[in-house]
Image (cartoon, rainbow, N blue to C red; front, side):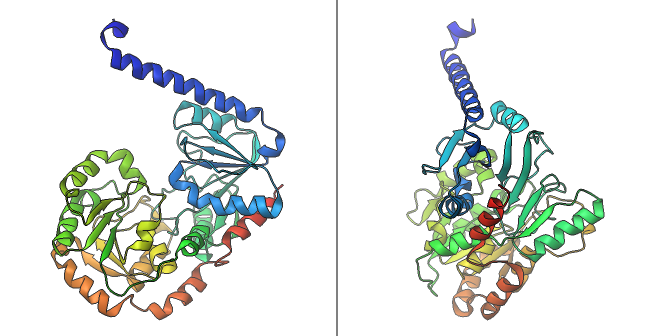
Amino acid sequence: YYIKNNKIQTNIFLINVKNYFKNLLNLFSFFSLDQNYKNFVFYSEGENYRNYFIDIIEVLIKNYNVKITYVSSEKKDIIDNASVKNIFIGNGTIRTIFFSILKCKNFIMTLTDLDNLYLKKSKLCEKYIYFFHSGISTHIGYTKKAFWNYDIIFCNGNYHIQELTAVENYYNIKKKKLLKSGYPYLDFVEKKNTKKNSTKIKNILLAPTWINKKNNLFEDYSIELIDNLIKKEYSVTLRPHPEHFKISSESIKIINNRFKKFENFTLEKNISNLESLYESDLLITDYSGISLEYILALKKPVIFVNSAKKINNEEHSKIELDSIENNLRNYFGYQLDAENLDKIAELIYTIEINGIPRKNELQEFLNKNFYNQGRAAEKIAGEIFKLL
């Protein structure tokens, strides 16, 4: 009855079955690889994450002549290099199986909460290695156990080592090897930038973070904010968080349908594209980690909207340390309460006159908080190679 009376459902079912077996073949293809490709296995959640990996992988290949397996949950997320084997495993059952039976020497990722949810550690994998795709602190914006199950963590700066050590001591959990790497994505964003900053603000980037709470910037205030900016003839690019495209697709559709008729509105669908960061003159966000790159790498001003806070660890106060994102927000940013969005144009005018607060202290902030500036990828690659 199902096959005869619902051809669309049948076709979807057959496509899903076909994709399942394709992913299963990809899984088997990994186990047939030469051992040299199993010394360093990288896992990416998708194309949006490739920018975090690429410099480290290129340095490993160029400086150490190693073979690498790059496993991704997105088909178009590949590393085009003869020394890299690309394997697509999707987001479903095959990925879960792959994680649980993986046999390799070093599994390298920027995925949090390993072994806490459905992606489990394999007893056949020697070392699980984590590096950060965001500059934010570890004890507020992430879940309580986000980093508990790794063997080695590459830390952006001393603040990460202090936070992770404090968590280990407070909860009496396994000590990890915490290495002083620096923040490779900060270097990547700065290196790729060729545009000279302008004091005149014309192009505005709106980049809310993913917050599953009421009164958040994306769901509750973005329409009002975009409307105010467009009426003042600013060009606005909305850059949703990757999670918004997964969970808030209907809200994205509503926003886009409302503003797509305006030439000065753009919806950024390719989050791996950095042009919107480089072309914009001002960032408006709430608690997104993108603010660190925008201020510290691009030296551009940021307005922080005081809407719902991004707190994913309700026990964060037990770790008596402030977060680097709060320090950055309070010291180098401009803040605007959500109920005062009609004052946005006045604040932008003030920013055009004054620029980033305490801009002359940015380099001191960088020196204090980030290791190996400009060479973090080289540091990480060198430490990974030592594990061979």
